[in-house]
Image (cartoon, rainbow, N blue to C red; front, side, top):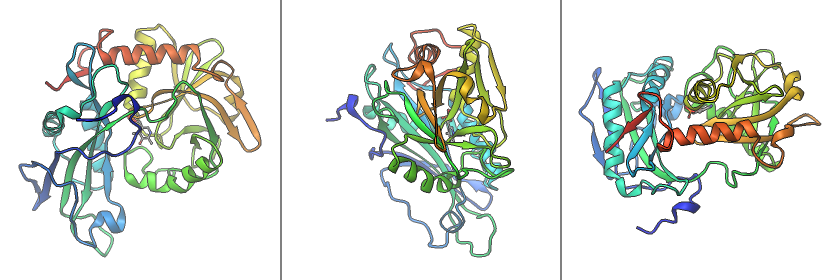
Length: 338
Ligand SMILES: *Cc1c(COP(=O)(O)O)cnc(C)c1O
């Protein structure tokens, strides 16, 4: 194989095997690994006409001791269950989810990047309504699939802090689907991300869709702030996607680093008071934020302008240390694939 692991971007690369299970007549079939990367479904499939789909994102990687591991995939299974319920889709059982994830990683083992390359095998479990509907209602047939693609960092040149802009569009609706991992949330964000990139920003920061007074998250990652007295604050809202990285990072901050953490609503006006900010997610890992533009005002995060802020760097080092096996992980956090 001829892959330049250290220079991979975050893009789809076909790998030999994907998992496919089909749901029909009220039950899942046995599922199988397949070498066919194309999906064939009816032109009126519910996913195509009414966006009935959910997904997950996780990474398999080589730890320092050479083992292939995944970080807390049980939480991805649980979150997909919650997403499926919200989207009127059948649940794919947790044990089967974990078995399928493992089988895809093992089948594509030579695509798991070596330790130390900053790359990983990204896993994309997803489910969609596959049979034809025309009147609006949930599908009765579904496919659950997992494909794998080797990836590098989501934000290239990760030592440079990100520049965000507060977006005047919303990614979610009040009491909508912002809290579940559904493709439709991303459809809502495409216009805004395209515009942000054209204007030179790395990502959009969204406000609460009901009142537009409170900070929520970016298009694909949660956000946290570090106060001047070194506490970590992260927004609380039903329309934020509950990031596994964020939940893990908060536990690491309080239990490993003795930092006080707080989850609460954060008003836009408070942005001037913070010392550091960062994004967190499976793809973003922990990425420092240098500035946030709000209209014609640019809010600079003083400790994180040129490089990662001190606390943000500590969080990154500790979390990735746990993931790579350099630091002992809390029980159940590291799932061994082989
Ligand atoms: C997936 C996702 C995240 C990150 O969640 P992780 O579990 O940490 O990967 C954050 N925000 C949105 C909108 C997402 O879709």
